[in-house]
Length: 247
Image (cartoon, rainbow, N blue to C red):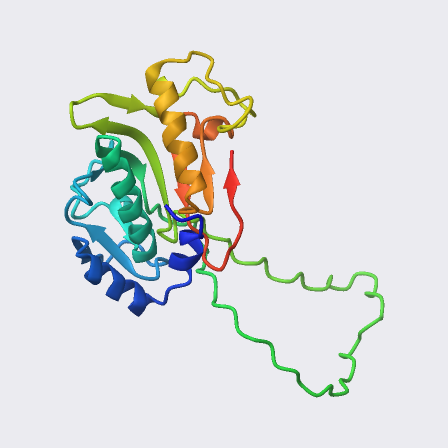
C-alpha cells in the first residue's frame, strides 16, 4: 500500500466521482433509498469484495432492509481496499456490528466548507435596549437556541465497527476474545504486546497496524482505546480531515 492518504482521497471525492469509481472497480452495490437521511451517497453492498464478505452481526432485519448495512460510497471504496488486503491474509469474512447507525434527534449533516468572501464593513445600529440591564420583574433575555447535535461518522455512513474476522478455513479472530490488550496501551509499536501472546492476538495486531499504516482510515480504535470499544475495531473516514488517530 502507498503511504499516501487514501482516506483524504476518498473523503474528498464528490458523490458523482465516488459513483464512477465504484463502477470502474466493479464493486457490487445498490442504492439505499431509505433509512439513512444524513448519508451523502448511501449504498448497500450486494456481494463480496475481492472474495471477502461483509456481514452484519446480530441484526434482526435482513441485509436488504437493515439500516446498519448502509454505507456512504466513500467508505465502500475504503472497504474495497481493506478487503483486498485482508484477502492476502486468508480472511474470507468481516463480521461487523454496524456501518450506518441512526443519528440522534436534531442532528444535521455538516455543510460543505465555502471560501469566505470579504464584505464591506457596514455600520450597524445597536439593537434597541442593548447594554441596558433588565428591569426588576421583567422577562429575562432570550437564550440563543442550542446548536444542532453533531452526527457521528456512523450516522454519516463513514464508519464501520468490526467484531470479528473469519478465515477461509473457518478460523475466527474475535476482537473481544482474542485481542488481549490493556486500556491505554498503544496498539502498535513498543508497549503494544498482548497480555497473552496467542497467535490470534499477534495476527490481529499485525492486521490493525497494517491498516493504520496504510492511511486508509482517519481513525482506528481498538479495545485499548476505552471500554466502549472492548469488543470491536472502529474504522472511520472524516471528510476534509488530514489527521490520523490510532488508539
